[in-house]
Image 1 (cartoon, rainbow, N blue to C red):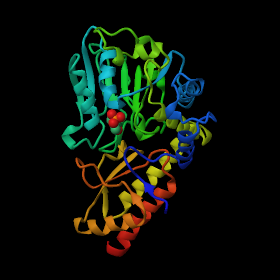
Image 2 (cartoon, rainbow, N blue to C red):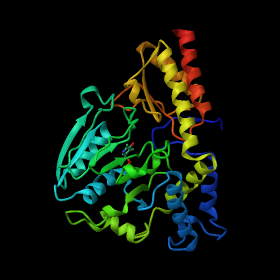
Image 3 (cartoon, rainbow, N blue to C red):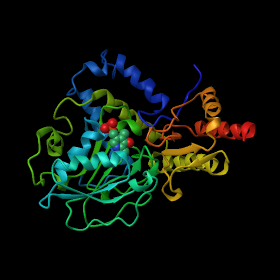
Image 4 (cartoon, rainbow, N blue to C red):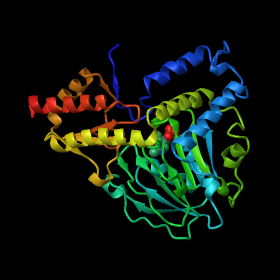
Length: 357
Ligand SMILES: *Cc1c(COP(=O)(O)O)cnc(C)c1O
């Protein structure tokens, strides 16, 4: 089959080598003569996978001492509630920034446990920008942000700085660029945007926050439950963690986060330059807040929609239809998307203009 350029927003492209190794493990894992999905998660072979996955996260993101890494279930959506339960303190009040559909969903979950305050929002302009100069006062238990807005295509280039503990949903740009983990009390991310298959979410948690909630936490939502059992309190999603681990190994082998950040910036620049210079297209977000992961854009001449759609489909491009709330197109350029795929999309855009512009 011809190579398909996969611009899907999530679940998304992963390296071919990861698929190959992961499929082998479904048949014969670690030379046990058994599949990875039929052995005990307490077996030495799987415990080694869990430990390597956790340590690769620490290594790749230069996680400082005093932080733990957990692989849990429930996706980022369960994370919305998990962070609310684990970060609520005596003020029972938290500040959220509403930069998109996911940020709004995260905020809603806090209102199940405490008083929610949306201190900044870009909803007024269909989430096309990141609010600046965000300050959460000391009367909040924490400040919650969403580093990359997968649907609208905006991304924080600088994170808010304040003494209020910072909690961040990094689902769609974790491992895409260097971050300073020490700035955050909790980072969490669903796997399927830039780390692995759906089914697990990674949490990077400052250990000193554990056990300090002002309300009782149901067992499975308590990060301390999972911390005290090395992320093995109950059966973890073994295959999703294994494939994520393989992808993190791939990232390490290919130069790590610093290197992939350069590649990601090159890919994004290539596409945004075309969006800006091609008279048939326009971007939908504020230039300074553009996401390197998800580029959203419109075709200015509606009459050319069918022609363009046919052209990119014929070029084996997949997954660039925009989210229904934004319309137009969205090209997601996660770590495993080769720059050649972006070049192909740019070529199709150029060709459209040459033929029909
Ligand atoms: C996809 C996404 C989510 C939801 O993730 P699930 O793992 O499906 O719950 C949350 N936040 C962001 C930023 C996302 O892109």
